[in-house]
Length: 112
Image 1 (cartoon, rainbow, N blue to C red):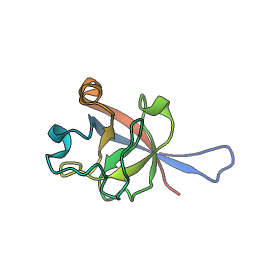
Image 2: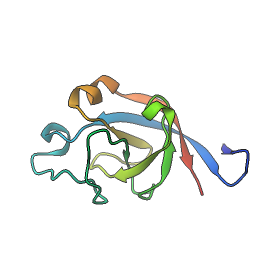
Image 3: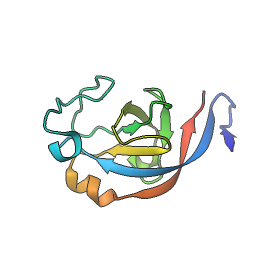
Image 4: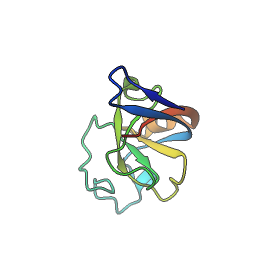
């Protein structure tokens, strides 16, 4: 299903996704991680973004229920195991990422 906002300039598609969490620690990103995402974004404390399959271009806007107060976040990263309808949400700490766990959610993906 595609939903239009009141002004009809934005369209959002609902996509059921497997949603997990990660942080920038060696356990999540490997021991050679340099603090930058796949699109060269320098990670800062408090950042909110997602890693998604390459079918979602960098900068694609998404709304994930329960993440970032259900406000818009952008795709800024990729992941080896992030394929298809799967997202990895960035958290500041490994504890926060593990607390999120694994969820299956209806994610809103901006289509234009």
